[in-house]
Length: 93
Image 1 (cartoon, helix red, strand yellow):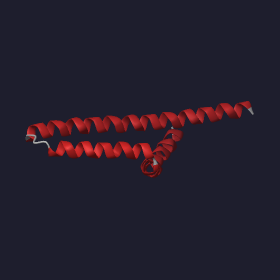
Image 2: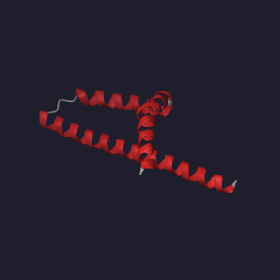
Image 3: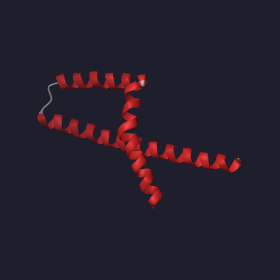
Image 4: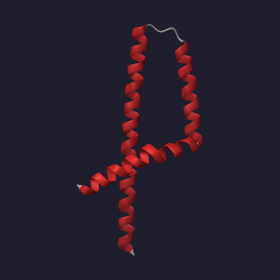
């Protein structure tokens, strides 16, 4: 279990700090962010009722939470796969 705690700390540090730097430098990510900003600006100009606005906000919030969780799990899986690969390579040496 101690290994799991250490890995969780490492994941948290890398995701919350190192990932941000990588994202700011990634051209494809920045293109997607600009497209998202443009679409959100268009949506903001649409005259929605409060009920409609709340429904859209809830849908976006749920989608964002799902995407964030997916990214977290994918990052952890990739890291664990890399560790397993390194362990297998060490066995071959």
